[in-house]
Image (cartoon, rainbow, N blue to C red; front, side, top):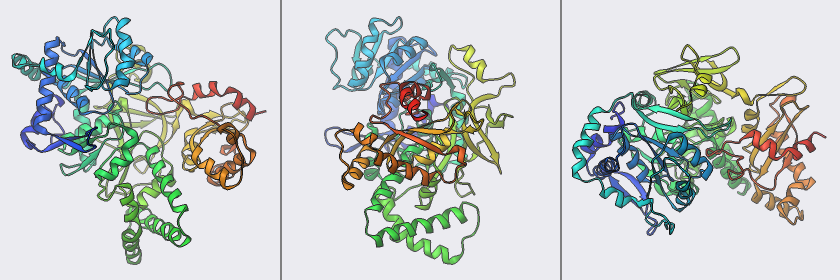
Length: 600
């Protein structure tokens, strides 16, 4: 366990401890098999990267960018940079040319590492216009370089630059490494405007690792599967924690393959966003709906017993009666274990979940099935975790847990959550104005999230700037409504509309496959997705399902009208951030006519 170790020395020290034990696993594209890299080899690659960076002339605290999907090479570059006191800036693998150009120019990047053909094609044109870019290093040998390319080299050729002659300089940089050094600059995804570079220091990581280690039971026995990109602070911080604990890391290259990978690997741990568990819930419920009546009743009964045992008793810290323990034990073995097996979760330990609000129905289902979901809250600016639930301690459905050590939390009069502590960013890179807007004179960071603390647990309500006020003077929390309705298997994406309007409405991207199946079963004819989404019978069907889900809302909070959209929200149209969060202003502009129609 090296949770308090400076990241520049972490891999080398773990290699001394674990030697030839495999730590990083990647799927071979040819054989389809997972191949391991030992701690010794990991340390060797890291050292080679560090020396090669010195050969290129990388300076102390110089910014180096990594633009790639999740690959072992991303980690080699990260820790190699830390060894020579350089800063890594991870770009989301789906970033556009304009986004990459902004970050490269803002950070003055000279050296850019790219992963696959997609990232190469996006980045190469920038060398003609960028004032700072000098070199591009390509991870994947299969990438086809442009005929006019004189600026790139492949990663294996780059490693050859790091010969023994740079060892002394590398060791000197290593000895000078400080907790005050910047480790990363993580650019925010920009839901509220221009992207900003969040500064994360080594000291912030060191504190975060120590405090997370106290509340998250990860050990060297754990098998961890990647889900989110390394450019996401949640996956980045989580992966570093797992490496500091000596756990094995399976690096999932393609996000679409994660469900298949889960069944292969049977991970003990994986961090995820609520949308992942919402999809799991929808898939299981759809599968159950197609079962015979007897089996369907059995599954629902098992989930209900699981809910009583794990939520009503264990979660509240109460001792369950013996009859319930026996019932749960039987149902767990007969039914719930089968559900977990189908998901590849037969040896589940903990599954941290954060990044957005999670529907209570989904959270209850996951716990009822015996899966150790750990709900939490954090931001890029807080080095991920601010609060999280504790294993074996009471928790409330809907909360995001209790504050971790090293972080102070305060709720302002308007409900905004304020943070202060050792893992909170000192500010935004080269952006004094933006820093002053969020960090006040007393050092409190203003998150923009609203919430409240009850019995030591933090509950989120919504984004301060996302709160809507209807023309009747009622305040609406759109994310709360959306998280309640998104669990429906016929709804894939949803954006609530209400600001300065008479009532609440919603733009809905339906599950097209589910709708087509429904239409075919009911004899509803359609020639296109647009026909399907505009069909009155289909709209009424979806509206009835929404009415069932929103019964617990106050009348003024309930969705009164909907529009089904024939195309999903997308990053290509700037409607989603790289973390798949909706850009409400953009969507409202794109669908202005549809919104106006709902309020005629």
